[in-house]
Image 1 (cartoon, rainbow, N blue to C red):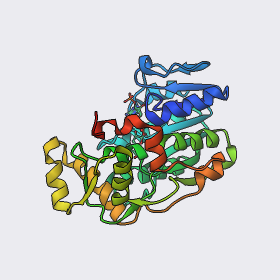
Image 2: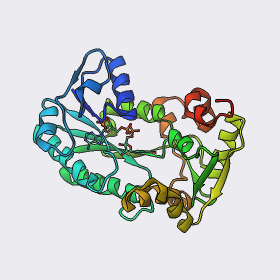
Image 3: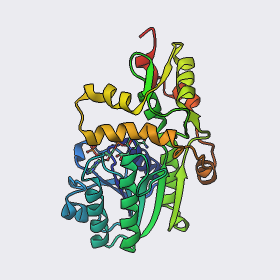
Length: 287
Ligand SMILES: NC(=O)c1ccc[n+]([C@@H]2O[C@H](COP(=O)([O-])OP(=O)(O)OC[C@H]3O[C@@H](n4cnc5c(N)ncnc54)[C@H](OP(=O)(O)O)[C@@H]3O)[C@@H](O)[C@H]2O)c1
């Protein structure tokens, strides 16, 4: 029995769909059972928030492997992740496949990436078998970086990122979940090439038929331009540092994991926007 956390989200629901298609026994672990994807042959947990260790322990009852999607970014995210790991241990789970982030390190530039490193350490120390999937930024996130005015703003310089599609991450996760040989291994999950923000602007400009520009902000400009959102300093630092991590080259490594594990090449940004026209509809000139 597999447990899929975050099954109402973009990655979790895709992984659950792939396991359902393969006829694999699984339980969807969700905060709101009403929003669990309707899939044949799946069990759905009672409401279980990551921070609620007792609820998570009940949700993992009888489960051998947990696919653990990282929680929404918050100042207590690592604590929530520890609660999930503790619950897995208490329930007698043997293995966790954790959705981490490329370049996760104690002092990586992307501040949210540090949570992933702390979570990985906690899982290693737990004694559970583990597989870490360190995905790059999502291709969908690249599109969302473009403002409605057609400008990408951020301090990424000419740094590059090998962004990856949700579908490719889910294909890898579904394969590795059922592959016991992947225990103890860490995989970077990236798209086919590393591209700069200027490349992102050019590709989306080509797809929308509209001029899309990249403005390489200074760090001061980046904080100032995000002040309008009224977000906390913690959030804004996470957003700005994601561009700084690109500038620092911490997301430029291209991995062959998608092709090696799934047998198909990963999609790049041009293919992503062609396959997901809705993702760029708001940027189209004739909307
Ligand atoms: N690589 C990237 O570019 C990138 C970008 C953004 C985020 N991320 C990280 O990658 C994760 C997965 O991405 P995604 O696109 O699948 O995200 P998503 O669509 O936002 O889905 C996140 C899932 O995690 C669940 N969740 C979040 N916090 C939780 C908590 N405290 N307790 C229980 N469930 C919780 C959500 O449940 P609800 O539906 O109940 O909220 C949802 O099912 C995100 O959660 C985030 O940590 C990565």
